[in-house]
Amino acid sequence: MEVEPQSNTSSISHSQSLFSSLVLLLSFLILNFLLIWNLTKLAIKRKKNNKYHPVAGTIFHHLVNFRRLHDFSTDQAHKHKTFRLLSPLRSEVYTTDPAIVEYILKTNFSNYGKGEYNYCNMKDLLGDGIFAVDGAKWQHQRKVASIDFSRRILRDYSTKTFKDNVEKLAVLISEAAITNTRIDIQDLLMKSTMDSIFQVAFGVELNCITASNREGREFAEAFDDASNLITWRYVDISWKIKKLLNIGCEAVLKKKIRIVDKFIYKMICSKIEQISKLQHDSRQDMLSRFLLESEKDPVNITPRYSRDIILSFMIAGKDTTAITLSWFIYMLCKNPHIEEKIAEEVMTATKEFGENASIREFSEKMTDEIINSMHYLHASLTETLRLYPGIPLDPKICFSDDTLPDGFNVRKGDMVAYMPYAMARMKFIWGKDAEVFWPERWLGDNGVFTPESPFKFPAFQAGPRICLGKEFAYRQMKIFAAVLVRFFKFKLGDEEKPVKYRTMLTLQIDHGLHIHAILRK
Ligand code: HEM
Image 1 (cartoon, rainbow, N blue to C red):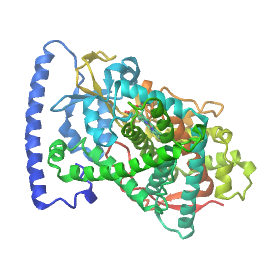
Image 2 (tube, rainbow, N blue to C red; image 1 turned 90 degrees about the vertical axis):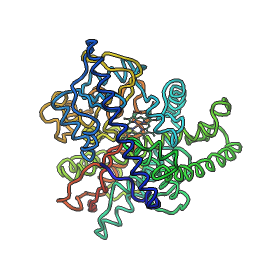
Image 3 (cartoon, protein in one colour; image 1 turned 30 degrees about the horizontal axis):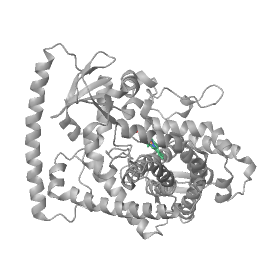
Image 4 (cartoon, rainbow, N blue to C red; image 1 turned 180 degrees about the vertical axis):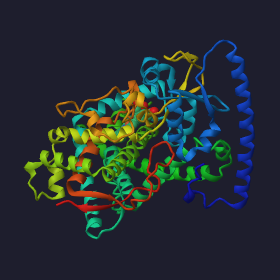
């Protein structure tokens, strides 16, 4: 099982950790009792002729296989497309079947959602933000944000932000290449995407990548720690007791959320002040636009609600993009012939910039037309997302008893999770080369990118709750990837060291991705 985040636990006193162990033991006993209770209830229900998916184990199998959780699930899915794990509180159904994915995400969308379980885990950090809620609150935010995301002003502002930030990143990588210094590219990408999303959200430069803004750096660290600690709640069965007693991770989480809130509310106040002096149509960032909405509906859109909305976008958009770019670079290191094919496409598409264009000139000259013309790059990023989906497993709660398209039953309160990571490895979906990194699978005979059904490739989810930032993410990833591949080649820092994911809500590379960058002539 994963250990608690170290930096956050050092302050726990000895007696507190003894107490925590007792709490853990007690919770374990209670859970075992509930598991047996649940099994008995299930046996009684079975007599009513309901059909349930085959059982692949209990959630304790997840704990035992925690470090390789997604591969454990893939192994199980090779045996059964859809299987069940028994848990003390509910059955957990895990599926790789595109028909079930379509059913829960679209056909019977209203019966599957975040539910109280996810809301309860996330609300201390995300409040009523879009990522944590269902129903009317979700609908309202989805509507406002969808309109916002389709606006030209936000699009142009974000493109400019990506170009500025990739330039800062490429300058750092150049310095490392010249001095032959090994870098953790995942760490740099995380900082860079944090800078991008923060600037688009608040209209303010955070500059994590250069570490020049102390307050901003403290906020970014607190936000990252708080996100990790919130994730930890999904495996720490005793978190509610710890929260009540304000001990361990929960005490640290509270402190981190306080730092995040202080910074965000300061930002909101200064924005409100600025806005009163500005023309409405000059507001480029998301916060300003939400504050504009709040002028129309001050009762519902409070500063607290604006904070919740923006933080959800940050959590949704920051790590997922950085993680995808990190796995993309890992794939380039493993497949140099694909790296060269991408470089060739980028050079051809940008021929008119001239061979000696600087990083700044190159990124500034990249137009939407050029970005859209790079189909092989688009296919390579999509193939990366297929094999290494930023969100590898996505659980939904079933709101009322139901029968899934394969004829099996689920009960109210059960969890139904679709598994993009395992789905990518299923031969019945992708053919016998399912596990091979092969961007060509996304290209038609004319070399043009051809999308797949989102129920077969649900890396961005699908249906009414499909990722709102998909286009935004591709634009950022394509700008970053084009600049990086144009100016550098990449090699793994240590060819022998296995590159693995760290089990958490996202598919981060464990201990980062250490590489050498080589300047491309
Ligand atoms: C490669 C990058 C990305 C991937 C793989 C990705 C994937 C996903 C997935 C799987 C979900 C569904 C999560 C759930 O169960 O609720 C989601 C939702 C969402 N994503 Fe993304 N995302 C990416 C980038 C972004 C970016 C850059 C933004 C914003 C700037 C964003 C904004 C959102 C929002 C707001 C939602 C919630 C939508 C809703 O509940 O209606 N995402 N994303």
